[in-house]
Image (cartoon, rainbow, N blue to C red):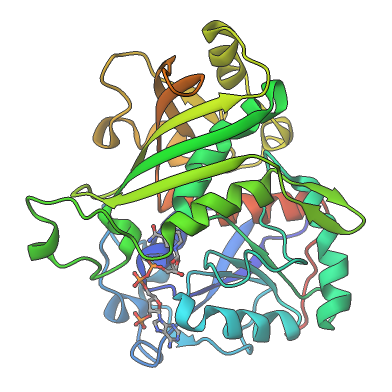
Length: 356
Ligand SMILES: NC(=O)c1ccc[n+]([C@@H]2O[C@H](COP(=O)([O-])OP(=O)(O)OC[C@H]3O[C@@H](n4cnc5c(N)ncnc54)[C@H](OP(=O)(O)O)[C@@H]3O)[C@@H](O)[C@H]2O)c1
C-alpha cells in the first residue's frame, strides 16, 4: 500500500470532530494533515481553538496544528466532515466539486438519490452510485460525497440487517433514549435535562423512519429501491453522556424461533470483517446476557464502540420479538462510521491522490 493517505477534518473542534482527532491518532492508513473549523477557530493552534470534551488528553500530534477555514484549499486527499447541518450541504458540495472525497456525518446529502448512505457491512454495492453522482453533479475527477447514517439509525440498522436477510422485516417500532453528546456542545442546557427526560429531538424520528429503508434498499438501474418495511420511531433525550439505547419491537415476514432470531444476530459477519478493515468490529452485533443489559455506562465501549450491543431478546405480544440495543453515538454513530467507510474506499480503490 502507498504511504498514508492525507486527510482533513472539517469542524475538527466539535463533538464529532474531536472524536475524529482521537480515532485517527496512529491510524495505519490515514494521517491527519489538515484541521478546519469556523472563523472563531481559524488561525489558532488546535489546543487553543478546541474545548476538548472527551475523556483522555488532546493527542500530542494535533496540539500545535493550526486550524484553517473550511475552504477547499486544504492539502489532503479526503475530508471527514462533522459540520453542522446549517452549512454542511453547501460546504461539502464545494469540496466535492474541487475533487475531494467527502465523508459526511451531516443529514444534508443523506437522502440525495446519487449519494450512498453507506454502511460497509450492509450496502457496499451502493458505492456504484459514485460514478453516477460524479456525472450528475459534474464533480472533478476523484470528488464525491458519501454519507453515514444518523447515530440512532446506525445502531438500529446493524441489528436489522441480519434479520432482514434471514427472515424479511415487516415492521419495526423503536423508542430511543439518546445521550447528551448527540446534541453537540454545549447542547442541551443542564437546567433542561437534570432530573428530566425530553420526549423530542428535532427531525430525529423522520431520519430513523427513512434512513434504514435506504440503507437496506437494493440498487436497481442506478437507483436505490428502498426496503419495503415500515418503521415508527419515538425519540427521547436522556441524562446520559454517550450511548444511545433503543427499545425495539420487530415483526418479521417469516417467523423464526427465538433461538433462530438470536442466532441470526450473533453470527452476523460481513465484508469489513472479511477484509479485516482496521476499524471494523470483530462482531458488528454483540449479544449481552443479563436481564438488565445493555446499559450505556457498561456496554458502550464494546468492540471499541463500533458494534451494536443487543440484549433482552424476548417474544413481543404485539409484534414477533422485542429487544434492547445500544450504540456509541460519536464512535459507530459518527466519526468511527465515516472512518470505516473511508477504509472500505481504500480497499475498493475508490480514493485518488490529489495534487497539492
Ligand atoms: N454528536 C453526535 O453524536 C453526532 C452523531 C452523528 C452525526 N452528528 C452530526 O455531526 C455534525 C456535527 O455535530 P457535533 O455534535 O459535532 O456539533 P458541535 O459539537 O456543536 O460542533 C460544531 C462544529 O462545527 C463547527 N462550525 C460551526 N459553525 C461553522 C462554520 N460556519 N464554518 C465551519 N465550521 C463551523 C464548530 O467550529 P468552532 O469550534 O470553530 O465553532 C465545531 O467544530 C452535525 O451535523 C450533527 O448532526 C452528530
